[in-house]
Length: 101
Image (cartoon, rainbow, N blue to C red):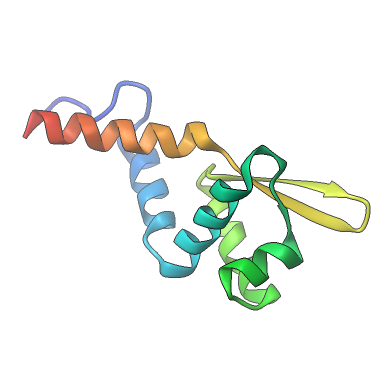
């Protein structure tokens, strides 16, 4: 059986899809996509995603482990950013799978 995507291993695809397979994590990604390259401070992101700060920390850790989010300290704040190339890789892998069906 051929791999689903040439750039990503199957376990990487599964990790990213699993990370995205939760309402709160999708809300986090949507909020960050709307924010653009500047990203959002943790408090702002929690508010836009309608989750508590501890819940944001939990879900962001999963998304970062999957390579979907990046974070940067700015003073006393943590700013999260979506890694569009990571989401694009998943979309491309799914498109390839659909084309092979």
